Amino acid sequence: MDIHARIISNDNELTPEFRGLYGARFYTDYDPENPNNRVIKILTSNTTHNVNSTTNIGGNAIVSSPSSFVFEMRYYFEPIWYYRPKYWAIEFCNKANARMFSLGFFVSSDQPNTDAKKLSIKADGLEADEITLCANRWYKLKFEYYHNIDQLKESKLKLFIYSNQEKTVTRDIQINAGGELPTRALLIHSATNIKGVQYLDDISFTLTDRSYSSGDEPCKISEELIDLYTFNDGIPSDRDFYVDMRLKKIDDFLTMDPAAWNTAQGTSGIKHTHDFYEVMLVQTGEAVFLTEKSEYPIYEGSIVIVPPGVKHGIISEHKYNIISITGNFEKLSRFDDATVLYDNIYGEGKKLAELALYNRFGKEEYFTSLCDSYINFILLNLDYPKSDMAAIVYAMMDNIKKNFDNSELSVVKLLKESGYAKDYVRTKFFEIAKMTPKKYLTTIRMKKAKELLSLYGDDVSISKIAEQCGIVDPAVFSKNFKQYYGISPKQYIKKRGSE
Image (cartoon, rainbow, N blue to C red):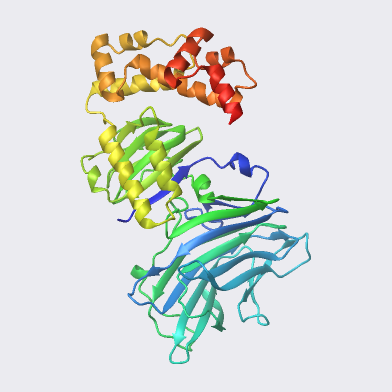
């Protein structure tokens, strides 16, 4: 099953543990020469820490037994400030991600602490004859690799570099890559004592069985067979193309996925379609989900089912993170239009979606199993709106989630405002939420109380925490907490302190 998981976000701020650290931050932006084209923008910020950001690109095999590959991309850079010349590199790796050979891109002009305008490329085995690139110009970089040529068991790399559609550089380099064919390319950006701006576009990595030729013309492969990565819809984050960052600060290593917090897909509200199902869960924040027919407010815990062929988009004035899982989920065939559901009170849908996201680059069987469990959870545990009454219940649940900290929030008033008989609404609420409206409100308040006691129990009074949960009387708060968790708030604080 072809399934992918990623984060859709419009939050460009680093998470707290990365605050103060900088690296190669990835965005989608406009082509500096063509505003109609979207590209990856890589903003490298100088740091004294050991920082590397890695873009992983999986080879797309178009033959059963590949013996060569074609890797190509468009590349543009602006003048670079540097103290150390190492800027970035392309490493070619085997299936186990072990490095086989690399090409380094180094600042080659001017003095340190100035804005340099040239890069030199040094490939393995190419120390004397450097290749120079100039700033503020698009280049097409094309690399052809041939493994075990004829009976000599040699490997060669052919470099073709184009500027303004004209070929400017050709190189033919012998490579000592061992006995395997590289199947993955890593673009490694260093941010240690160097800063600058780069752009990438039209990246492809195609595994072929082409035979080596000593000529200076690149091999011909049908454009239909080359898997191009274009970035009009954000930075892809899937098994074939993803970005991660490994930072070393003092003795601690931190890892993150810049593609996750910088994709910004959908923030413009542009509607698009695809030929697979998409399941989106709002992890944090709020937004508006758009289709050609309707607009749906979505917020933390909202689950959106988007069938194939449905035009949709997202707009928001607020920050949000959305976990998006896509695939050909036949179990979702009952949905013929975009549908907004809501996670249960325990947040089980969110936990399953996060598990799938965190394991998206792990064993494919395990990742697929997690996604299948997530879909089954949605179908078995969440009642999707079939009537106006269901919509009223979901709106009531939304109201309670957003206003639980208001001590004047009245369940009776909410039932009355529905316009239906209170007992009827209460019954429908129980059918969907599996609990009464009063218990639903108490459950949300107690979950928040436990969170606040864990964080601030030693510094903030229990009466103050009770107020933040919408309960004025500390005695009522303690009674509810003990009924829900089996111990009093004071006992809970003491227990947490002893752990």
